[in-house]
Every structure is written in C-alpha cells, then in structure tokens.
Length: 639
Image 1 (cartoon, rainbow, N blue to C red):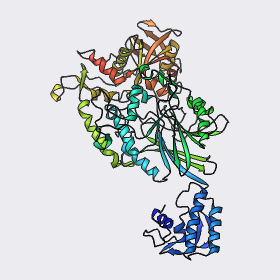
Image 2 (image 1 turned 90 degrees about the horizontal axis):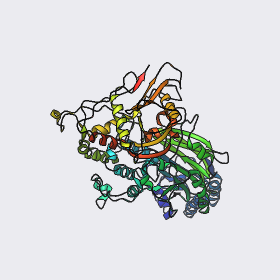
Image 3 (image 1 turned 60 degrees about the vertical axis):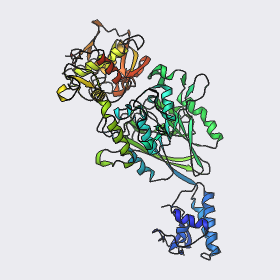
Image 4 (image 1 turned 135 degrees about the vertical axis):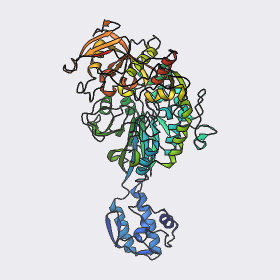
C-alpha cells in the first residue's frame, strides 16, 4: 500500500513515528522489490523501519531517476540522524539502482464499447446489468491501480432504450460523468441526430425544442441545464469538408507519472451510409487506418510512443468465448493489418461481439485487439507495461470480464439515484397514447415462423421508407429477435384512453433497441441468400431466425431441403423476384450491419438512413386512426 503520510514525513525530513498500522515492516533486511540490499531492516522512526520509510515497491515510480532521488533523500536524512551508517547508505543506493524499480510502470486501461444508453438494469433484456453495476465493476478495477484510464470505443449513446432515449441520452452522459471516464471515441450512433446534437452532448445546454431535455438531478446540471460531457469525445477521421478540421479532437493524451499514452479516436468510416444524410452533411469520414498512420509522426514529435486506438469498427469471431477470437473476420482485420507498428493496442466496437485477439499490423507484428461486446455486459481489463526510459510499451495483457447482473454485482449507490430519477420521470411519457389497435397483436410465430406483430412492424417500416424521398423501398424485412414483447390490447376500463389504445411505453417495449431504418439496394439473388440464411446451420446461422416481411412480398420454403436450396419461390406483388434485378429493401440498422448472421445484407448498396423504428411505428399507427389489425400471417409458406 502506498503510505502517503509516511512519504510526507520523509520529504519534510521528520522522523516521528507515523500513526498507521502498517509499521513496522516485518522484513529482516531492507529490500527493493525482491532485491535484497544486505542492510538490516530496523526501526528508525518510532516503530517504523527503514523499509517503511523508503516505500519502494509499494508505489509506482515514473522513472528510475525519480526513485533513486527519493531513496537518496531518505537515506541522506537517515544518515544525518545517525540511523544508518555511510556504508549502509552506499549499499542501499546500489541496491536501489540494481533493483530496476522505476524502469517501468504498469497502467490499467478499462475499456468498453456500444453501451447504447443501457443505464437501467434489465431494460431490453435481463442480461443487461445497468450502469450502477457497471460503475461498481469499474471502481473495483480502478482500485487495483491508481494509474488508470477508462475509455469507450463508441456508440455510448444512440439506439438507446426509453430510460435514456426519452431524455435525448442526457442520462447516459450524466452517468458517465459520475463514473469519470476519460475518453469516448465517437461511433456512428452518436451521429444519429446529426453533428449539431452531438456537439450539444459534449458542450451542454438544453435541446432547443425537446421538452424532455435538461431534466436531470441538480448535481448533474450546470446553470440549471444539461451540463454536457466532462470527458473528451475523440474522432480523428471525421473532418469538416470545407476546412479539413476535425469536429472533435483527434486524440487525447493521459500522463502517467511523466509517461504519456495517446488515445486516438476513430469513427466508423461508413457512418454516412447508416445515418441520415442531413445529419452528416458537410462532413468527411476518412479511412481509419490511413488516419491513424498519419498521426503517428505528430505523436512521436511529442515524445509519445505508447499509442492506443479507440475505433468504432470491429469484427466477428466464430465462438461465444469472450476471451477468444477464433476465426476472427470483418473490417477490423484489414484495418489492423494496415496499422503503423507504433500502435500498441486497439480497442474496437460496432459489431457488438466480444473478443480478445492478436492481429498482425503492417509489419507483421501481433497487436492486441479487444472488444467488450455491448450494453455494459462486459468490461475489458487491460494491463499495459511501459518502459519509462524509451516510453515504449513492453507488454499488454487483456481480459474481458462480465459485469454481472442481480446479486452477482452490487449496484453503486453513486448511480442509483440518477437511474431511479429518470425511471420515474419516464413513467408519464411512457403512458402517452400514440395510436390504436383492433386486437392484441402477438409475436408468437405460426408454423412457418411468421408472427402477426412481425407483419405489422414490417408494414410500418415499408410505409416509412416507400416514398422516393425516404428510400423508395418495395420490401421491408424485420429480424424476429428485435421484437421483444406482444402489443397488448389495453382497455378503457383499466384506465386507458379507449379500448385498444397503444401507449408509447407499449411500443418501446416491443422495439426497445432504438434501431434506425436503413434502405439499401439488393439483387433478387441477394434477397434469396438472406432468406436462405434464416435457417439453423445455413450460412453460419446459429439458430432459426425467420425474417418478418412486409405486405406484397411473399415466399415459400421447404425445410427438408439442403441449405441454400430451401427457398423455392419468391414473389413481389404477385410477380416472381428476378435474381438479377435490383430491389430497394428496408431493414433496421442492426440487420444492415450483418446482425444475426445476415452478412449478405452488409453488401447492400446505395444505403439511405431513416428514422428510428419506434418513430416509424408511431407514424404508422397515426396513419390508421381506426386501428391497426393483427397481421394476416400468410406471407411465408412452409412446405
């Protein structure tokens, strides 16, 4: 343990017995780390010994020179006090130098990614721990090493559940302020509402029109308004087209006892393809690897040789082991393969996969690459050892750790009031009536895998993107895993506005992920490949996932057929789907990124980002004031 009271006395030249239980050190000889000086350890200040005074391996030193200076000061004062002999001082100084203490330091980095505003435990899924447990885990890791940094690889906000999203994700920023994170690399979802709103997330101030902005607890506000992030947003590869200046700092530097570590922030290059074009107008999203490599000389000129890349891009592996990366694939592999050898560590995200890899850089040297998955379910515990002379990284060890839910991890009391406040504040807007249904609509599948609610959601998404201005879609497909609950038939006798009233809370519970709609161009052959990927064991699919489809589109499949030969017919508005013809198809952003194993959708071209799925659903309900009926469940035929 680092004994601050003793160090203060040493530096003052005083040797009264310190008032702490750690004295005396029980060692028989004075040791520096594991190096034995050969000098007898004995009491020199009350009950405290020479070892107690020197405090060698009980703290970290930014350089060997600083440690030797400390030992010189302590031993000189001991010599003046006649507590040691001149010969003993010589031995102590020689041992201090030989010990190597101060030649390196160990820094702890705590990484996460794709938090997506999941501040409330259990929201969206029982496996989501909530920010209070997340904070507890971070505090435990920080306690292991005072030299630490907590960093995020993007999508901290955006596509968030109701408790954060309703309040413009201000609750998540406030929670991260309380935790005290250091850097967040801007992800694509941070741009969901455009550059101006993202700048407000950093700079603070209430939203100009949203009534749910600035409703935080007094201690989290500034001058009665949303305070903004106290940590840095980083994005080296997003620049203003006109000026070439970055929107946010390209990198941040943290100084550990004179040893600087640079954290380069990198946003998904493909962000303009999956967010609203108006939100990123006038911005250029540059190649990630090229941008990192171009920054290395700038960092080297500052004497910085320890470099961490926080990148919102990732990969996929073929196992569920969060500390493995068997068969790692995806964009992150190519990016790391092109990185300058000066990059020591890559903390990645975007794919929501958890992995812990070694991937070769441009010099063929292995680089540690990590991702902690999603929603705060895991954290990456990273120990980085830095040579204090050369400032180079000597080693990196990383482990993905589960945050834990329920009794497995206690909630941090420093966060529980914030979560409770927003949970209670969401109760009234959650009860807002947004439309009407004629009967309860369930997500229960028929024999073919089609649900009444899946039909309705797909129809709503098609309606939101059918016009030329919104995408020109002719087909919409929805992943069944994104439909989390039935849509209940609420009764006026139970206090609702009228029979069949649908509340915003009902709709959000059905689709809690806040995915945005993406309209893209696929060939008929690619559409068929997507449908062939629905079945367990086909094209890498890990479970059956029958996509829900919009009105006018239908297909038949034979379950007994071989993979990629199961879909036997495809029609759109009564006409066969042609394999060579291009069609505009709407899916949510999760599917568009290849989620649930639908990798072929990543090949869709001419992408246009749309509104959030729940907003599209609300507009669909409002466009049918007499009530939306359950879907017919007749679009998919199983033979």
